[in-house]
Image (cartoon, rainbow, N blue to C red):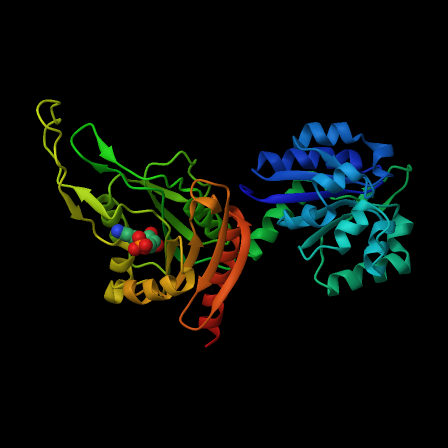
Length: 401
Ligand code: C5P
């Protein structure tokens, strides 16, 4: 499955471009988001409107279009993709990629990108057999570009031979295989908390907070994309359950703690939930509106992060907490790291001006025992990706030790 994957599909000019329309459908059926770039030649074979309709996104065609540059620079096109698929990859575009030429949007996107590239070549059999094409493909493969096809069979020009683009389903399988091969956290178990908690006042009323759960959910989704067996313990949120993640829905802090403890041991725990610090000594019956307003007695809630971080031999190898602060961010984060007994703290500024709480982006610093890494302003999705990649790196290094 390709849920949550973002594919940038570069369609170059060849008759096989008609199969790329089918590829868009196949990728989307498997859950991927597909955005298309078309070369001028591709537009002679299929229309941008067809690609736009099938991808449900706009299609990018022109390097020099000011409006397109304003809305979406060529750098962002690749930044917002997890994988670039070039289908069909023509002899010409392959040669440009080898030589580093960038004279249109498609070639510029490819050269300005650090994202993995999968080529699905399609061309006349003699063009494919040509020594230049063969040398170009070999060189690209040496540089880490992957390839599917071309295949043997009847070609458009009433010839037959090697040159047909791989079928859309086979390309979609290769896309899935790419993500499986890059699943750096396969075999690891991850536990993530997310969202607010609700603390009952009486059977109908509760105290909660404004946490949206966006960040915790994005982290769980990113860990699952890297192949981790991911359990998300979530308080009440409006966020959809992330695909590929086992979600346990809870309300109160105590329920959240019990659900987390039941998931230990795990390899990594990320506590992103905004757990209520206090709960109310609950009234068994609904409080009546008579006489003076009731005084609520608050009692301390368990600290889930500190409990998980001090779980003895059930403690995850890596425990990550958040510090939402409005001032002295790093100092407070360092202090919190020690107090809670966790390994890393992601410190974020939640002052009203930052718009982080409930918003779509975050401004994070990763604080461990030795250093502070400022990540700058990123979408919550990108924070999730970055954290998941850092977690993968941590286990990689541990494995090498
Ligand atoms: O102490 P403070 O709430 O600032 O700490 C924030 C971190 O601790 C977050 O990672 C949060 O998920 C976690 N936490 C928790 N249980 C609590 C309070 C906070 O897991 N009761």
